[in-house]
Amino acid sequence: MAIRHVVTFVWADGLGDEHVAQVTAGLAALPDLIPSIRAYEFGPDLGLNEGNSSYAVTALFDDEAGYLEYRDHPAHRQFIADHITGKITSRAAVQLAV
Amino acid sequence: MAIRHVVTFVWADGLGDEHVAQVTAGLAALPDLIPSIRAYEFGPDLGLNEGNSSYAVTALFDDEAGYLEYRDHPAHRQFIADHITGKITSRAAVQLAV
Image (tube, rainbow over all chains, first blue to last red; front, side, top):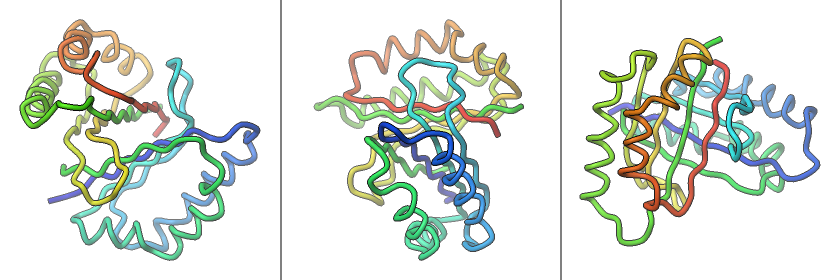
């Protein structure tokens, strides 16, 4: 059973383009470091709808073990510590079977 | 520029397996009705993490026009009216360029 991971963030007030660029650069480095990532998409909301969140990440894994490898990988945890923790006002995540 | 649409929901209290089955059946019908959908994934959260949302939908479109066709399609609006409006406590959505 493949797993799709979906997460959205709302940035804290005062975080702007520089933060978004750091987030995007940090995420772009992860697939080379975490072999279980099969597909990885990330980026800021395009502004098509009112009330959207700020940014989304989606990832595809072969199975639950692949997702857990990503979730708990030191490079991913470091990315979260550097760019997410304390920098968001909300987060919504789902892992679903695909 | 292809567009990935991501949305997560948290169900209102008291909604259970029957509602989830109706949501899943309703979503499963949409790709045959809305030609601009290029890929469509949906399902309940697998319960791997505390604090997750209840359900997610992701969709892929060739471009912004394809996404807007989906967003505004009568079959999609009817699905939302039947199974989402008044049945969630929160919703988080992003459209991103992929």
